[in-house]
Image (cartoon, rainbow, N blue to C red; front, side, top):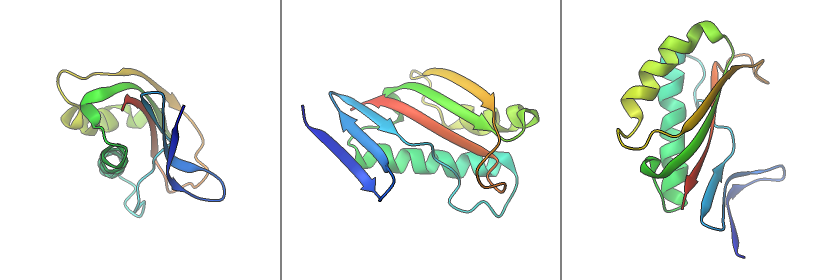
Length: 116
């Protein structure tokens, strides 16, 4: 089996393609200076789109998503961005949890799995 690693660093890869699947690392907003979770979610989803494209796939092939929110009170705002981004026929299995972020400026982190 061939494994392709995308944007690898000493610690991790941003995406791994193996056996017909694409696994993305948790993605955060490239610019977390705006604490608005809807804004940060849109940035994160842009990163998801970019990495899926590098892996040769797209959001239309999502299988699952795990969303981490610094404050579950931001659930509705995150969902506004998520629902406007999501392909209508491609709703993945999804879990959303409240979690303490490693960097306090990050309000949302999203990890996905897609078909290659």
